[in-house]
Amino acid sequence: MRIQTPAFILDETALHANLTTLTHIKKQSGCKVLYAIKALPSSHVLDFAKPFVDGFCVSSLFEAQLARDVMGTQGEVHLTTPSLIAQELYELTTLCSHINFNSLSHHERYATAVQTQAQIGLRVNPKLSFLSDERFDPCRAHSKLGVDIDALWQSSLLEEKSLHGLHFHTVFAAKDFTPLLRTLDKLRRYFGRQLEKLEWLNVGGGYLFPQIDDYQPFIDVVTTLRRELKVDIYIEPGNAVVGNAASLKASVIDCFESDGKHIAILDTSINHHPEVFEYQRILPVAEHDPKGQYAVMLAGGTCLAGDIFGEYRFKQPLEIGDTITFNHVGAYSLIKANRFNGHNLPTLYTQLLNGEITLLKGYAYKDYQQQWLMHN
Ligand SMILES: *Cc1c(COP(=O)(O)O)cnc(C)c1O
View 1 (cartoon, rainbow, N blue to C red):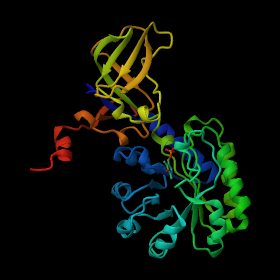
View 2: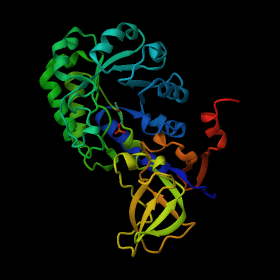
View 3: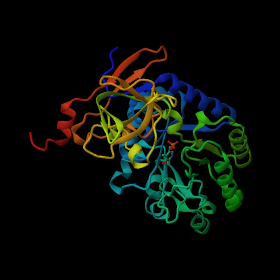
View 4: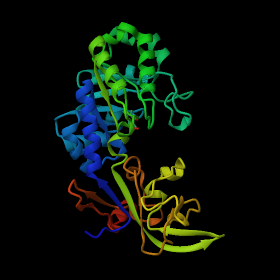
């Protein structure tokens, strides 16, 4: 089919491979797997993932509602958020099977109300940093994410048995399991046999399973914990499910020179993948050839001077009408995309296992109008 750019194209072959990897890890270790839907909450992904996972992990009422829209009453929905809102609590308890409080204060306020409806967990901040950029580090100084491990120790909550589980999530795009092993060591040193009083331990997301070669350390530690503590172990990957499973295809709409550099303006922008600007992320481009003779700055079409994807190299000069494919854009891209400058969102397609591409959803002026026209 003819693809209308800018196009966000899901790759079901990659999605299937990622979910198969997770199923393998699940079978070998006995862990439970939740998909963290915030990475890409498209119902197409949720429907696809449903047979492979034990449930979904969510961070808000809307995500919990969407998870239930897809799953019905089957499966688990785990909520973890610093943004628990009193007025939403009742509805959340009807949607979620597990609620992880982010603080001792929320636990104290809401545990009684939640207790009869959902499993109660607490997010702990193990105070072990593995990330150099503190913007991604839940264990940074003055962290707002989770209960300080020392405060949890002093609270005696584990001894009192007022929790069903503990949750931690401390890494981002990790490619080996050292952080997991060290964090679990620290938890066991602090709480020892008190952990046996729990029913589960949720070790979060952040591991890029498809890019890790050796799963044995993970399988070993999960097997040991399940045997010694008699607890269920959950993982909740987002990026590992969808990160490499989508591309963004754009067309070149203008080419010119500026201070001696070739510029190509695209019909997409950093607003379709804000992390390019926020975190200076460099996206892989399918047409890029490191030995290519022609260097071109790929730029978005908005009014922002810094709306630039970066400099890439090509075998041929780019021309108006050429297409550019950014790979590896499945996670944290479309969900953060916006219509700044009145530019439309990308059209959504999916590439089936047989290679065929089909349309999932397109947006029109009426979607922009519905958001911004305040009178009717
Ligand atoms: C974001 C997040 C995840 C998923 O993280 P990935 O890096 O996409 O695997 C899982 N759990 C929690 C609590 C999160 O905040």
